[in-house]
Length: 325
Image (cartoon, rainbow, N blue to C red; front, side, top):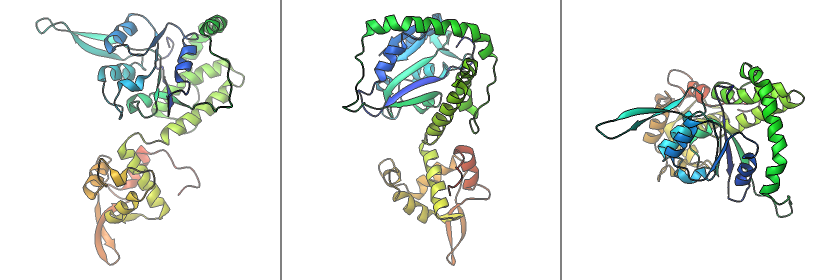
């Protein structure tokens, strides 16, 4: 992390408890520098620990500190969001009303965060590589975890990694690794350190790392991070399946309500209506137009033209794979 400007977060997610998230952190604490294993550290404590000396944050059950929709605990969210980039600081007021000063905390630190799926704010997951863990089956067997043995066996591995990283530090810090096709912007930013390390390691690692990059970036972009992006994605699928370049609002709403595993039939307590549809799309520069349809004039949405859907699709959705509509 001392050689890079970005240190991506590692998010360990699972649908249910008992899937190994805590175990990953328990092992990781013996393989990283200055680990700080925590379950419930306050934001104030973490601010001061990170700013006073380099640490590696290993935060378990982090989903419990946010609400179901990933909101709440804004101080901790600010630390985890900003702390992925070296230049970032978080400002906080200190003192009483008569003697108030602003204190800026340096919050750059690597972090691994474990929690139940769906409980992590999107602002954190977009700065992270998310690994989804599953419970092992009954017939799957693993050795018992004995921390005393892990501490002994991990020591030479940790020391060898530290020595190697010291020897290649300047090389990886100034590298500009080639990204897989389609990996740009923030995904490229968070993967650059890992690909630089893989290139320095040589052997199969450059190819393996880029295969992992393609997989995780595709997996992340396949899941919409907001209602608006989910709506744009469903509309692109809907227009593509019908080979349509325009559809009336009535047609769109009926089709959206019938989509399996979609939120539109019960959108915040009631079916998505024309007003809510317009409000969601307006944020992306898309607006309804009047056009001729079946001998009459209707209001609806068009793919092309000013304020059409195509521009929003190109800006906010991943590129469609060949063979898709």
